[in-house]
Image (tube, rainbow, N blue to C red; front, top):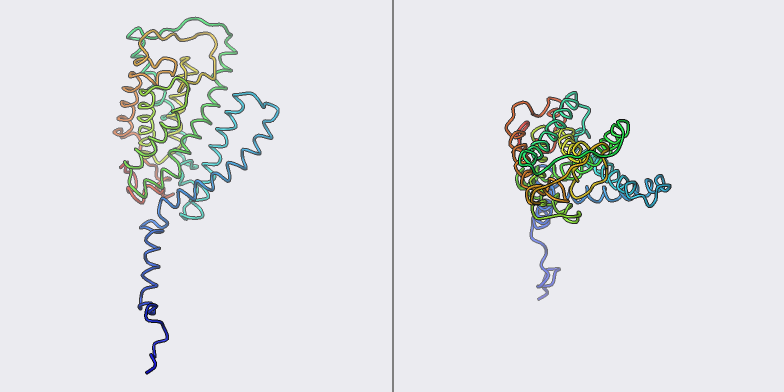
Amino acid sequence: MTDPTPFPADHAPPAQGEAPARRGAIDAVLFGPHGLRAGWRILLFLLVAWVLGSILYSLLSVVMAPLAGDARAGMVVQVLVMLLSSILAGWVMLAAVDRRPVGALGFAADPAAGRDSAVGFAAGGAMLALAVLLLTVASMARWVADTGSGGEYVAALALSLAFFAVAAAAEEAAFRGYAFQALVQGIGAWPAILLTSALFALLHAGNPSVTPVALANIFLAGVMLAVAYLKTRSLWFATAVHLGWNWTMQSLLGFPVSGLNEFDTPLYDVRELGPDVLTGGLFGPEAGLAATLAIAAGAAWIWRTRHLGESARMVALRPLVDSRLGAGRVA
């Protein structure tokens, strides 16, 4: 008798509902409660940032060709590429994938941006000043006269302010921008803070004169800057904190920044007199225990103060982290 089944015995037809079940499994890998899962969105962001960065690097290399060989010009190109590619890629992802206004990234045209920037700059400078005050009181730092004029001094402060502003914005866009915000939305605030802060420290592992204390402090600074963003949802604020710290350290007080000493401030110079584990040595105060106390104190103040918070404008823009944490919450 002929077998009426049109399929061989070892190739039975798919059971009813098997294809939908397979599609459901694929959807579960790709999508979560907030749409495309954070890991896939971060990979897309990195791809877009790499493409944009490659284009921008080629264009800026042509523009800066007359300064080829100038180490400072090369650094300017690098930070501009990091800044522009991180911001533009974040805007692309927010608009095309997350269906949010580009201002949700954190550099919004917000009436609170000026206040956030001023308070952040003052907070970053105060943290660094606290670390240096501890060294000065302990007779581990003093300043000596140097050559230069008042005009050269003002010009050096202005030039370094512009450079450090771009560099701080670039690092904040890269480490507290879209990728960090998507990660918070996907896995929560503290796992995202710890992971990105570790990457932030790793970025500085090749700097001159780096030490274990320096890397620990940069990790702690990453935590502090992540809290600064989450407290306000403002990259203006986080950037200003970062800028206030770096500019005060090198331009105003004459210390190296993360082992680098790109700007020589006229009129005076600093001398460090104590052990490197306290002063930071050639790496700068960031490699000393005085900075550990200052960063921890600054992070605690940012976390607890009632004078900072998410503005009404940022709430309306719906930052990614708000969908996980709720508007105005840090963690």
